[in-house]
Length: 487
Image (cartoon, rainbow, N blue to C red; front, side, top):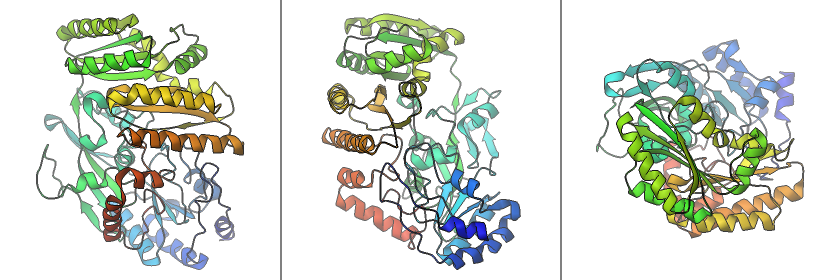
């Protein structure tokens, strides 16, 4: 218990959003008393107060930092999650769900201490219905793990946020990624969820075991929990849509004289009904970074990376239509490929963009912004954002899912430089408000987490916030589920 008492004296630190971490209000003795109760549920190996384990579970891939949880538990079933939640609820201990820690908005930070529920031991693919194109998974199953499991079935799960995130964590943040333009986000691909509420109640959002492709039965509780970021309950099971692996995939790359011409091409490609699966955008700064990182020779101008899914017969026609559209908009150096190896080479810059950005300033940390606007507003917001970056001496190459208006500034900064941290923080707030002024959102796929709560209020308005607070109070009246996030 000496180690545990030392843990409770951990000093809060949050370099990117200072002052948000709060002292844990529960008595030390209250936490100590529940340790044995936790062990009676999950065994000695299922409970940890070790500093290294707690540190690991108190941070994600973001620049946000705060104190770690006081305890980490490793449940193996929904029954254990429920039993542990009941203990926490009785003793008023905060609960923070943890998947793989790949989040980008500080969503796993233990702002008020408490108990981290690490769900990695719940890693079973439970039910696969090939003929119905759906699967049910536990929260420890990752995107890559599921697709590896599905490899010989002719099916796949296409939502791809980049990192090998846990699927239930992806549901919790309403993640999306490069395939969203064709296959949608997590919100469109979750059929049912099993959720443990703050008091240990087990809820099935669409009814236990149900997996219809559509329903108009009552309120959409499934979508209430998709994007809730662990603030309403702990997702312990997700039923997901699956898709047939495309017969043919073709990748293409094309450079443009301006952001406007690249976006105009995107809009026209979508209007033409081309079977496009991905349309990714890199600005000139990012292209230059990728050239340097991988010894490539792309023309240093705004560039689109495209991928087509469909039948072999249709691919040639789809590519021809796209090439004509890009040419009419001033595009050049259009190149495409169907075989996997060449496709990989064409897309290498996009695949390695994050690492190429980091290589611009070795030893520094990357932070990704996440605004999304109507596609027609992309040229204006990108031009204004690039001017803002230059004016404030911030390193921030741009990559975006241009097919749905979502783009990221991959900002590389020194977290130990207070002046730079403040400049970046001010920039990100200006960028978010710029997006809101253009009828967009402050977050397209990363979530609200720690840093965007004030922006959420600006985005949806006080009436919507009051409704959200009412929902939160109804499901979690003691405010124990991931407190300090979203609202």
